[in-house]
Length: 326
Image (cartoon, rainbow, N blue to C red; front, top):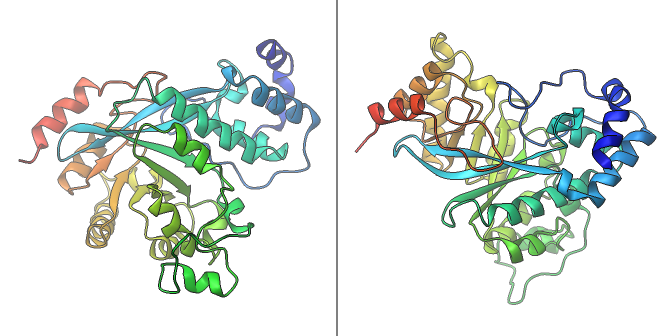
């Protein structure tokens, strides 16, 4: 029923969809579910469609894209990516999540997407592999009253801010992470987008130690898109740093871009941060990443996102084998 209704209102959805939409499956398509900036007032048709998707989650599809260790030439984890119904404008995660924001249902869709990803990964992703899960906004963590964990003292990380009235020590489960953890069968990384303005809130960094104590790792995603990236990197000290396409494209032909990448990678290595080059689309780009000792990569040249975790392409495997370090 939902798919038929979507096809009927397709022309209308195209009219209110973001203008820079690229069909999923195409190189440079924005795979992550991070929404565009705030749009105009909610469109009633979009509200109705998003609500139906929440009620009929079988139309929300989960794709998995490998994150590859370039040094070892093997997959170490998968990013879970949400797609709307096939053959519709909502197939694009960029459009899907932007419309959810307009409907006032972004957080509900975001929560459901992670839950579906965890459930579907259970039978598809090897249990020791990392599962990278997108977070559309961390704003809910900044609007709650918190209770310090049992045994917490003023020396507990984050407690100083808590004593000053900030939600630092043990945030209420505003993102339903405990619910997610109960079903999780993999070590997990929460991807925080550099495009999320909430990352710049000073209350966020003191919250993260309590979440890390529960087993969560963090990635700063889309690094290179916003001007505040370095500040977020310093404040949040994520375990992972995902470089946006803007820092990867042109590496093979631009020596200055390559030198900048090498400096960034070395700085992250010294800080104990794992660097992942995202949206790697060509073998030439992959070769530069290998030559510059970038530790991890993800992109269409390695493997496109797919409902069943895909194997690495033969061409990429050949190049990885050539550069493999003992």
